Image (tube, rainbow, N blue to C red):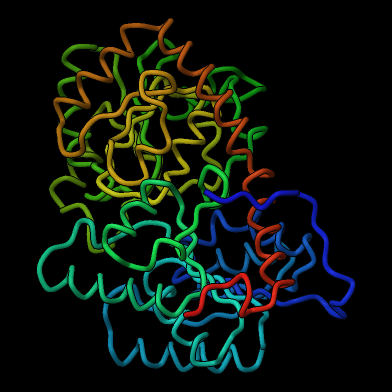
Length: 409
């Protein structure tokens, strides 16, 4: 793992004007959490340009961070004609903006953005690897996704991996040479605002009020989930496990903080209907601030099949909530087993049930894990620490000779 050294920001006196960093993602959903990252880059002395597909979240994020934004539609699915058009628009934008450094993440923006940047000869190209969609794919689709990831990595000078296990998986898949794969600090791309995500009542004006707002008794056992409601996040297994949890603990409620994503791994209509009609399952839909919802939970569960580094686990941990997640890529980096939470194999409702019931029946163990979890996150994953590492590293790239510190693409 790499550490950028000093966390202070300093541009060389030889730099006459602010260097431009272009940050590109595929869709507006990613922008929801990107504001502090963009603002940190701006405060570090960069002129920041955000590129994303259209949406109100793009405008809101750019305005909050005080950065410029450009909308370029990019489809998540494979669409040859639309992808070629997006590639041309990115190539044209890069020629106009002439950035000193580009950072592209998410699969489609990662491929098209790094390719356009290489064609334009952008001197410093970073591909941020935040997960591997191909881990849940098979056959021809997996081969296409693997080829796309290798192309994105080949076009970049540096591949920033979100976690140690993701870096190991990328190396095993031969996405890039090992020396090109980098993890900053302990991982994570945005860290956690440890003041906003902190232990306490769900509503400081009325302790327990969040439970009342969503119809959960204060004395109930609450199992929580935060994120997209999709198959890859393990929702089918969680719903199956909850039936057993409810049988063992009649006071149990399941709080799903998230939305039904119409991605390729979307839940089928039958499971959606079951979730929405279940008297003990509470589905919030998209929320702009998830912090109060963590405080309404006793245990947070993320039974995911694939991750880069799940920030929701860090948020729950910062709130002092023990987490049950899987030993899949990325997720296993976000928990210290038996200290801050529990790790289980993906795809096993029985394992979810057993782990959750153990924690619900042992309040002291939950409190002990919660305290350890918050201390661990505060030490390694505070938003200020994580983002400062990235900004300092990017400044070092800008001030270095492109043929020096950077790998040849």
